[in-house]
Image 1 (cartoon, rainbow, N blue to C red):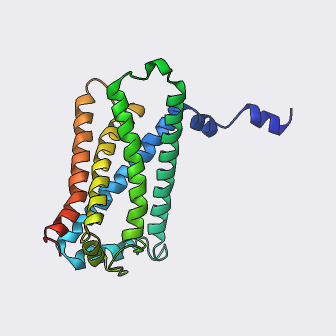
Image 2: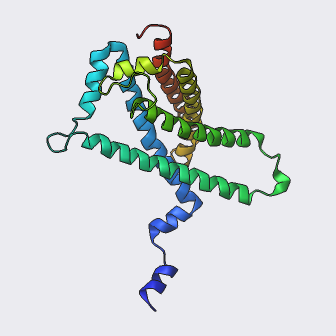
Image 3: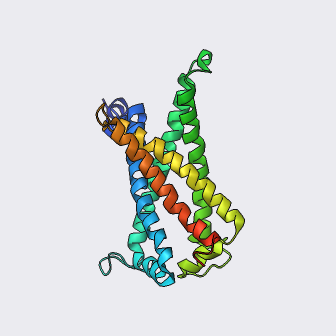
Length: 234
């Protein structure tokens, strides 16, 4: 028996895990938690806008120097970006493939079954699409500054005020953050189930945590455009 034949008959553990439904759900849970940690850190960084230009501009400059002199300028930032991108891709691919499996396995006679589960699935699916499109917009707006009307590199405060001074940017951001809240609320609970963290005694605490995280992050992110629109930040 050749090596190629043995490999074909005995796929690696990682390959077997990835092909399984349980494995894809585990990948979604882990990558979802990675993105959640990023969102918490990102929200806290955004709130520095309330302390004025020096605070948030200094914070943005500090992010580019983390790890120096061991790491080069912006190395840490790019490592974090690549890790986040990998998480987003794995999360999205897993979600898409699980959705296709679910549709393929669903008998047509059950087209009207389980309205509550269907609502949650649609919310997660379309919420994910909205967030994916928003990420592209957000990068073009406040990272590459391609569509930002101010576009001053190193002047984060001014760029934020500039983008949220446009009504359509506010609408895009608000819709995306509401979608994010629903996504976190359902996703945190699903991740806890997948990773085996839930049980009869913990269910209430996990649901409260999911609701609290969703509310906290949504309110935290929305506070910035609202502050610009109302003149609190200007």
